[in-house]
Image (cartoon, rainbow, N blue to C red; front, side):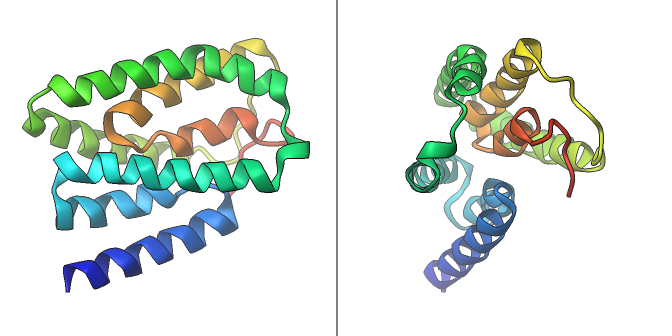
Length: 157
């Protein structure tokens, strides 16, 4: 039964993520955590999100703004690595609490729909920093990374 729930949750998350361009991890993390436990859910979710992102890159390769990706990655990659290291060494009760706090923050971010972000290097660097750490620690920073890349620099739901 657990496997059926995980597959159904994954399918639903993929549908939403495919339509909206984000949100898959936000939907799948509670399901995977309930079935697998946080300790196993985060790595499983990370691999699933990596596979999904690789397919998105392949399908939209010619439309990628590589300069923005590079700027975003300058802060996102080191902080995601630091978050992943934190996941590996922190007590799992702490990680579980951080995941809960991340959900609350992501809901608050979604309430900020329609807020303009300034176009520029700073937006990409700060966006990478804000998305990188949560991504590495709890696998749910993807929703935060949408904002700096949203065109025309405005986030709309």
